[in-house]
Length: 467
Image (tube, rainbow, N blue to C red):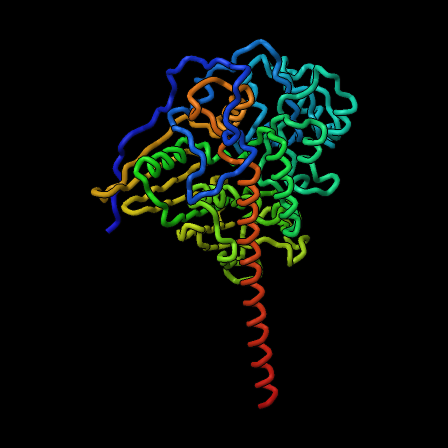
């Protein structure tokens, strides 16, 4: 018999603390800075969910000095769109207030960058953008930069195919380290979408960032959800050992009209480009993955069950070998012995996605539902077969990740647990490695299936000829 769900509480997580002061001497321990990485079964950094303050209730970081920022990328991630809630510039404006000064906007599409910049200058945040200059490359900015334009932080929101490697033109991290050693870096995810053989280069970049001591955060914003941190809190307070992670990501394909997304040679496929968030959350709770244990199967475009009726692009223009799978299902073992599973589907129409993550431990079930729109957490505990439901109104993980990163840059003097970077560059590399392992495992499975089918057809034809 199906269990019922019982409404337990609604968590209005606001802070009554006074605005924090800044200090200029003693620095936070380096493990809070996001440059390095620490392994462990599931002991990733966490934050008390009550400290994740909604954007409309936060206080601007104090001070009178300008906070110079360079934005790399003038697209939707940086300036928003109707397709989703992302908009880094909006969060920076709210966090820093009048202190924010965007000294440069870097994008090879000069006209687009100029257009978005003009919209900002026509709004109430003009003070942050009225002196912003547009450049095609970071090197161009460096050549024309005055000392007063030197950034305190650099935000990278350019497409992932242009970063995460050591190849010229796709090595923005190394350029930043060269021109601005020690300057804080915020990097969008996934860290790259290049070919698999370049993965090792991403780990080399990770080491370079760690060695530089730069405060680096990667934009796996779901780690900053209050619901996710509540799950961490339950696990840690009860001394639980995660036994299994079960993740499902069903996208609404009808709303995806970008041809590149449907082409694996350009986007690297939906698991790497899109499902990366839930593979990352799985690792956040499960710990390190035994990559050799990853197994996967796929439903592909040329199978009977793989037909899509509302696809918005002309898939015939994409080479057959580069067309994306409709379903990918993967399982693996964690180093702890726990088991992980992930299913990504290209099945829904309309606009809303359907995503869930379940974490199971002895006596406990933690189920996160609809994390992108209205995060809801269902918790079952020992001694009660019913599920308690927690809701988290006004949560904005995009703001929380930016806010925590800036607090660490500013060295805000609060309880040391108040601000932590939850995803370092190396951690993001390991998530990228897992998504590639899933894609490769599913492609091996498909190749074996096709080979077996071809062999069976050959045998059948030979037997027919013999008759």
